[in-house]
Image 1 (cartoon, rainbow, N blue to C red):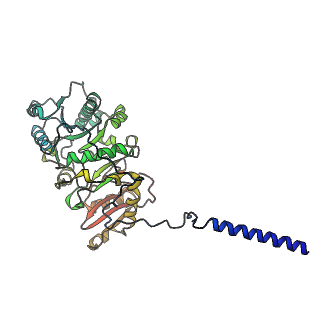
Image 2: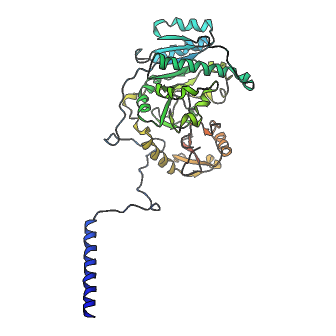
Amino acid sequence: MRSILKKIFITTGVFFLVNVILLISLKGFHAPMSKHEPGPPIDKPINPKFPLPVTSTKSQPSISKTNTILPVVVFGCNRPRALQTHVEALLRIRKDPELHPIIISLDCHNDETIQVAKNFGDKIKTIIELPDLGPIHVPSQFEHMSGYYKIARHYNYSINYVLNKLNYEGIIITEDDLEVSPDFLDYFQALYPLLIHDKTVWCISAWNDNGIDKKTAREPTLLHRTDFFPGLGWLLTQTIWNEIKGTWPAGFWDDWMRLPEQRHDRVCIRPEISRTAISPEGKKGVSQGQHYEKYLKKIVKNTVPVDWKSIDISYLIKDRYDPVFQARIDACPVITISDLGNLNNDKNCAQLRYSNNKEFVAIANTLEIMNDFKSNVPRTAYRGVVQCQYGSTTIYVTPTQQPWNGY
């Protein structure tokens, strides 16, 4: 019995000594948190409207700004006055003709419009007059919308010509009824490196669909990621074009760009304050002024000078943007539509939740922002969230689906 107790004592002592050694060797070690334990706090921005500043480190390099030749391709048809006004505006803001050559692309063979283009002489790079490409085949149900098929063919021919015949790396696409901000060209020049660096981004747009004066924060450098393709002044690379050109649609090219088959969960970058606006000439286009009176003519463009070369845009990279974006929303209380009338000036932000498209439309109508969907994506939305200003409060119209699993 005594020998057995001795063995037990020795065994227990050895076990105790081994554990002491292990504890000493693991000093300072912290076990990983379980999925039920709260994670470390995320710093909240002082003002939830704006992204947290991102400092440049080895693990988070800033995106270098390098000048790239980005021609401006102006699409026109039969609006000579619109073309004259638009190109004159581009010439006023252009600092370097070599960096931003202007190419005018014309359909319709309208003599007056062609003459306006020719009058610019050597101020522009070249004029593309669409050749005879034969009759357009329009499905019978869309015969009243044949203009959209002409536009799609025009875009297909000229974009391919500029990117693959003239061999530019990227192009800025505009239309003759667009007004441009003073920093329109600088904006695209600054954002082009992001487009090359972050493969989750496939276009840069100058347009905010909800860019009505009272619906935007007055912050000219604020930019957003969006799942919705905005167009209306946008930057396209040769690489993306060669990816999508093979299945370019016969009509309604912009809605085709919004389909999941083209987007592949990639985003566009858009500004808080538009860098384009629709001129009164926009009422005379193929769309017959759709949305013009209610929304489009109210979109305001930026008028504040911005030194884009000094702005660090690396916060827009997906891995950095997403956690800050979500933390900013999570910091905002959830309210209902009936609470909007009682918002205090000291409430920086709030969430309005929707669980289906019908609920989103009701909220959008109350906020007086665009209420439609394309490929089930609301205009300006990112991860289902649409944001706008309501007085001094930033409203996030947020899906109840959390975490976000897609449209």
